[in-house]
Image (cartoon, rainbow, N blue to C red; front, side, top):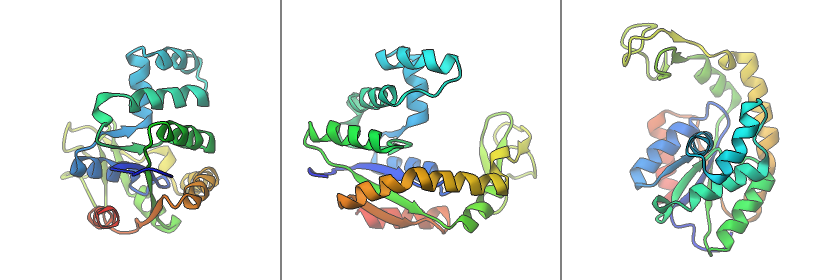
Length: 218
């Protein structure tokens, strides 16, 4: 990846690696926008951007938004004013097509990007996710081991009931991990070839992982 990556990062990591949490923390530390692709797609549809209007047709009939529309949305988002000093991409790119499109977009602006690949063992992910609880009211996330609610089963913020998500059951987690590895392996290869990947040990606590990332990028 030619060009300086100047505070432009892609966060990769399997489900339960803490990728979303770390992307938010690091974005705040560096004063950068955290661009979470799921939220970006929802915002584009809500704001009726050109790509959002296109995407809405697929979302309304329960179909996946096609690659070229996701790419157009990502570029719409990267063209906004708050991205001038850098950004953190979370959930994009997800495929080689998206990675190539992003590379072309950056090259045309003589910019580079760095990938932070959060590595965690599947055993740790199962332990982490099976202790994860979500609030049925406000969707706040807790962890019975590392971030328990003050009152068992009750959300600190809104008093809602806490539950274990269906996709956090051990057998589902193993399938999700495998799917992630199959989908992401090509991306890791792609960025490794370009010397644009930093592997982060993400097996520890939230603070440890944050420190690992800060040390890697400073």
